[in-house]
Length: 151
Image (cartoon, rainbow, N blue to C red; front, side, top):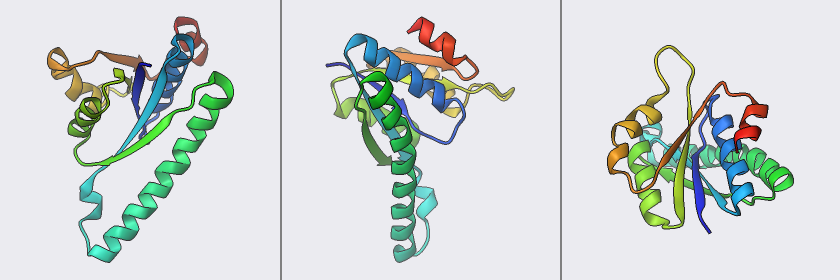
């Protein structure tokens, strides 16, 4: 079964990327892997405090994931898996693609701000010619109805 890899973060455009990945997986018999990446810079304190901060970050990520996972299971019949990695976002996305050969498409949401589509879209677009899988970039302001019609 092929899988769609989508990145879970706090951005507004993440929602459209999640919807697109779930809809495509549902319509094609695929799966969804939701990847959340924690920056190690967040934990540059004392060891005990860093461990507590990691645990709190994991709880926050799992709670956020459950919102998307419930919708995917209930509305799309897709049971997503959650992967949490720590490190540089681009490097961790590439590592996840390498570690899971079933991942066949990376789905990213593009921001709508004047500053550009966002750091992940910008960084991965620059290296897209050498990536082992295609990238689907979903516009952050695309309506739910439009997403449903194109998937």
